[in-house]
Image 1 (tube, rainbow, N blue to C red):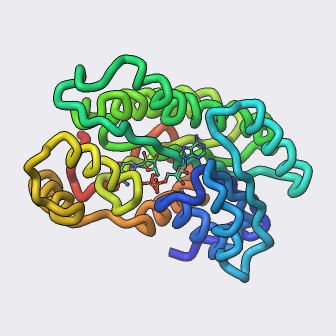
Image 2: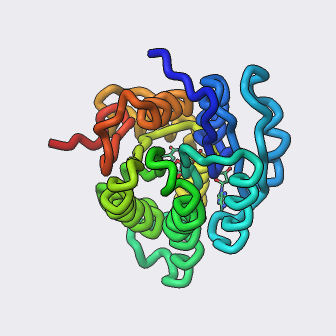
Length: 267
Ligand SMILES: NC(=O)c1ccc[n+]([C@@H]2O[C@H](COP(=O)([O-])OP(=O)(O)OC[C@H]3O[C@@H](n4cnc5c(N)ncnc54)[C@H](O)[C@@H]3O)[C@@H](O)[C@H]2O)c1
């Protein structure tokens, strides 16, 4: 599939992470000008490793839960590039505590989880959409999770935030359709990234007598829950994001695409 974004500007929030970085690299390879945003200070260095064929990337260290800072970044990108075509939101935070049952977590542990996993992506939409409306075309892609579709006991606040994100994406898709802007979500299954490893770390802390390494734990879980029986990769997530941002997906909006080896199947 040959997709190019030559002359277009793509904002990737969470670009220093496993999936976000793959997305930023893939859009750059497809000749977009990519704006790399992340809470991590490594984001600027990461942006420099992207495709030399692409226009010079912009990089910003910003907390997606800080709306005022996001607004400044969005304004700066608009000033520098004159356009914002696509926004990808790939940020995530896991609780350091395992659920099973939910009262293993204290209610106050929900605050930062909702702030990053739900209010963060919503704030990104509030900050960037005003710059996209007049162009009458564009896309948003939110990275949710299959946890947002199944009431995952592993991390209840994460699961609830991801469910909320899917619902917000659907509202946004309806509101943005008259402006020619499409909004969709992808739901990864098991991708080997720091966030995925944090789930094993929380499980390890809760199961004192465990002997499984991270990869053993993950592969056992994948075998149990994913019919295709394999990990998903950041590049597979990026491929779907590029497709959704392209004109090949011109009639797709308000959808949640699961890239999960068949863990969660929709009618
Ligand atoms: N890895 C998986 O198995 C998996 C499964 C389902 C969903 N997801 C989702 O995929 C997305 C990407 O996660 P990942 O697996 O690449 O994890 P990751 O930890 O590699 O990347 C997450 C990135 O988000 C950034 N981030 C966190 N809080 C932020 C904030 N407040 N502001 C700005 N940036 C912030 C982090 O610095 C990091 O670079 C997340 O939405 C996550 O929930 C991942």
